[in-house]
Length: 291
Image (cartoon, rainbow, N blue to C red; front, side, top):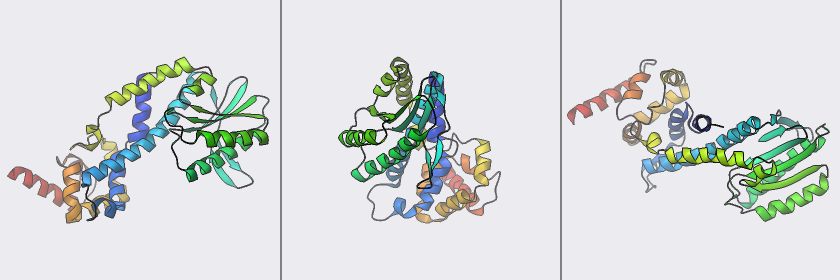
């Protein structure tokens, strides 16, 4: 797997074309959380906290895509990962569901094992439903069900998971069940060297990552004209943006953080008519001329 492929997956999953637009909608939806008088942190610091948390979550989704790509590239076949449990009538999606000539695998993939007690219980119940599905899956191949945490430095609930897995093994004797952290999963499927090469690409991406690309004055610089057209037709986005710009408290913070050079707003006005946005651009241009 090449570096450019890793970079492309992370950029699409984490930032995507709608990343900046989603930010505006999120701020408008959670207005009081960002602009409360009872917060001592600035709007920008709150924004950084909010969006870095979002980035961390989306990076977990990106890693699912990367592992999926990796498995396919290394000779495994992807299987349809969606199913309905007939007993509970719930729909499920397996993080990784794949096979090779002799074996079939399900993998519940997470970034790190650091959850509190209630969440770990919910996660294992979810995993148990997938093990049940695999046990009933019609195949002559050997069956494997794994919990896999990418970050080997966090093993907060390892004892709990191991205890529950032992109980699960008694219930589903036809399924080989285990838990892995870090590279050990890839050692198990005999692809550790290939994973080390891939993980080098991920570390390269981290080194190249620049916060200024997310929280600089030109926050919307990556938004293409086609995405601006989509934004212009997104009523939720337009209403959110106007709500933030018409309010005196939020207007300065929003304008100074996102639209200081007017580029995005000016391009947006090519596709919509908004007196509120037009007035803000005029006001901002006048202030810049006074300076």
